[in-house]
Image 1 (cartoon, rainbow, N blue to C red):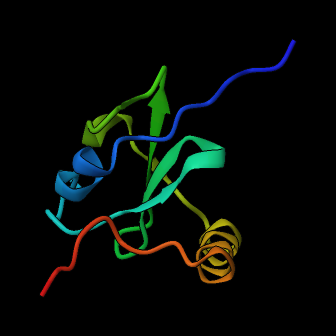
Image 2: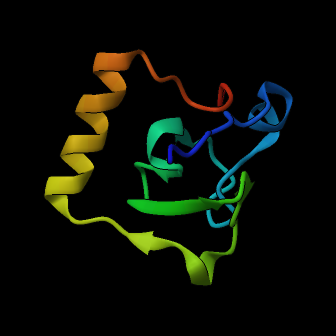
Length: 84
């Protein structure tokens, strides 16, 4: 039995921001997470719904931070919006 994953809608991604610093996030569809590399916070996506609560965010350790940034660079994952 395979799980069918749906990507988050581009319109939703364009307005999603970290609730802590209001900055853009990196969206990793295959892992069902949104990541804030500035604060090293990871937000889960459950049943195609981003859980954007600061108290539910997970702090990412150095090795995971490095892995996510490398994965973003490798796959051309851009921030959800331009912060400038």
